[in-house]
Amino acid sequence: MENHAVKTNKLSRKFGSVIAVNEISMRIKPGSIYGFLGPNGSGKSTTIRMLCGILASTSGSGEVLGLDINRDSEEIKSKIGYMSQKFGLYEDLTILENLQFYAGLYNLSRNDSRQRIEAMLEMAGLTARQRQLAGSLSGGWKQRLALGCAIIHNPAMVFLDEPTGGVDPVSRRMFWDIIYQLTAAGTTFMVSTHFMDEAEHCDDLGFIYEGKMIAGGTPAQLKSTIPGKMLAIETKTPMKLLAQIREGQMSFNDAYVCGASLRLLVDNGQEYKFEKFSPAVISPTLEDVFVHYAKLNPKELAV
Ligand SMILES: Nc1ncnc2c1ncn2[C@@H]1O[C@H](COP(=O)(O)OP(=O)(O)OP(=O)(O)O)[C@@H](O)[C@H]1O
Ligand SMILES: [Mg+2]
Image (cartoon, rainbow, N blue to C red):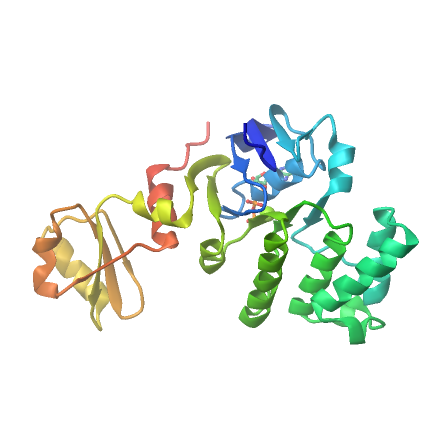
């Protein structure tokens, strides 16, 4: 049987009457990058915190690196890396002191500590600035320092909760280059994100919606699950065209405006009805996929 870095079975967490995470079953392959997507409040952080052994589950089960998330939570904490949405840096300590603090937290020997701190400074591009206060760094640098702190003990599995929020595109690209290098060396990542371009970089994706996992697979698999054809019609007045198509009672399953183009999802075999608008058949984006799945799962009414 294949071993998984993460394996859950109907993992759930309630806060009072709120079901934050609802029977999630998932698998993450060792050495892969798993992207965890979902709107605000859908349960991403809660799931990650349970997998990191920080928060107990209320039902279901989960294993991380073969350890039980509730019973072996202390051992899990020492073996994984976790970067929270807030980064967890000490702003009034220097860059070096932050790394030293985390090295101490993971009980690294003096030698290992020296070696790993040097490696992390180099990875983050912060060697020359190590005596500077962490609080004085801008977003992208803080993020790379936070990653260095989270993986100072060279963990096999790393959880990153929205690591690139509030970070510019160039820094995001640099951050992802680091993740790729670490994955190539065998590290497994679970990364929550709202960025679809980042989702494209993942080996597998899970989409969580209102606490439930509503879709999963590789980016290509997910795109192939959308039924029908996605048409793009170039026009300077997309809203006007949409109204015209509605009035003409030409049926479509989804429509949205993307710059100077109207995108329509139509049933297979119905494309010909739109020929007069000279549409291009395009492949759906991951955003199309998630909008599609979210629509299939209407919000549950409050009781
Ligand atoms: N400690 C808590 N006490 C009570 N409710 C909580 C607690 N933590 C989370 N929740 C609730 O659980 C649900 C899921 O929250 P969670 O933070 O996991 O979502 P998220 O997907 O990480 O959202 P975001 O994208 O905004 O970070 C929300 O309804 C939230 O209000
Ligand atoms: Mg969150």
